[in-house]
Image 1: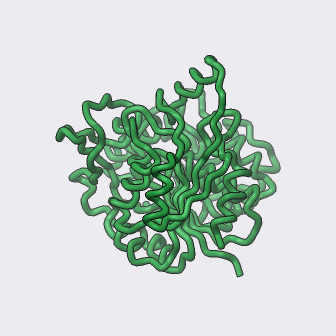
Image 2: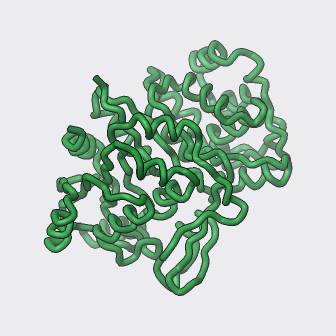
Image 3: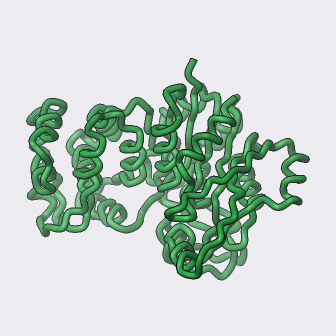
Length: 379
């Protein structure tokens, strides 16, 4: 019988984990993936603001969902989906002037691909247009496509996601943690407040470490998506994926009902630790600090901690490239100390150490190694 797994997080860490399970996990898992919905930066944030300003509607951010959907696609045209849907549009047209069909022809989609899209969707959806009076330039096709479907399907996010699951032939259940506004703010140890996911993760300079994370005032009513409750209640394992600690992970646990649900769940909690910390957001935190933060916001202890123990010798040029990575930002590698291992044993938290480092980025998890160690934990 397939093991029922719920993954939870956001950003590249979760999509990397799903790709690891897709490539090396086998077909023994029934996967539901809960995705953070606090993203408000770059072109995603711009698209969300246009929806609010011009249409008076909240657009749940499509970016992290998009990556997770693609990673779990079993379609034989998976590579074509990546080629066409991940394309950044460089032509300067008004969004309102371009139909769904024209998105694909604009990026050079082949006739076989277009015929498959037509067979699945038919004429009506392909003629949909999104009435936004701004340029489509620099947006990704997939983000605009998901926003277009959401708007034209009577702002029914579930209907849009169902279509995307069918088009991409996704067997897993990719679930937004909420479809309500989920804007976050970080409260620093000195009382300073930093608002919005993008500023917390990418923009702000910190005068103190993050002491707390909360929903902003206009997001206080954000409750968990109904499918989150269904998935967690039947899960045997809940896997917390690697990624930005506060903006990608803990942002899920401040959504109403999610923490309470996981706290009562029968599932074992597996936490895949980050390979590095990140300047400002997690500057100076140790492996145990990450675990303590997770457990505090989760309201229960984790059962299994998976972490890297490989110490790479990087050249000066490699180290500079590594520390300039957007997910590291002058941070450094994390390793479990002997004292931390004793503390985990005292708290009856099993830890699994292995060489998990991707040799291209140096900070990401190697997918084959990650899948191998995760399968060991799923006993």
